[in-house]
Image (cartoon, rainbow, N blue to C red):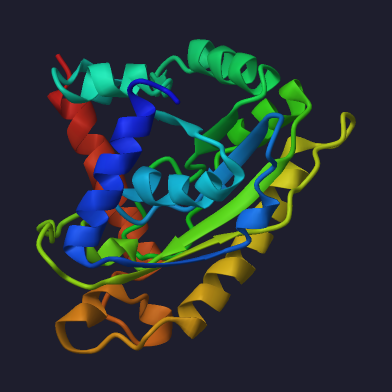
Length: 249
């Protein structure tokens, strides 16, 4: 039992029960009971780290997530994140966080990474950064392709959070581990993992209850929803980046 992480999991489960969230988890047997692993996860909502971690609970594992450094400066969230052993990431200087993650992996921890870096506004997979694969290679551990679907309906970019009782179903799928041989090109493995995650995501979307009415805004344009296309979403992301750069002192 961990003095911070264990109670947080209990609180989260109570909150999810209050909200009526209905989780469908598949592939949880692919999470190893011992040893390090990199859990690569798609990014749809602000709560994805809390949901994805549930897939590791049956194996008795706790996921150490990599999260942007600003979260660790929050007066409440910061101490909790540090107490749970999560890893701060400075996007402008990521070498230190890379080393910290590799150290945790070599120590036998499961490290959670969002290779898209930011939430996908189109709810399709964005291009992946290669850092997660390079970490797995450096530590000599496998990658766990993991996808979420439905979490965007709880709280995503540009939407108000739905903290009340919503009875939203959320799918979590963990694919078979992907090994990273020493001599392989990380980009090659990155493409393979992305392909596997695409297949997992499409399967989760196909088996998910139909979205209608106002909820069509949470459905990709490819499936008849009103979410931005990947191209439109990329343009908005670029505008955000330009805005942040202008705002810097």
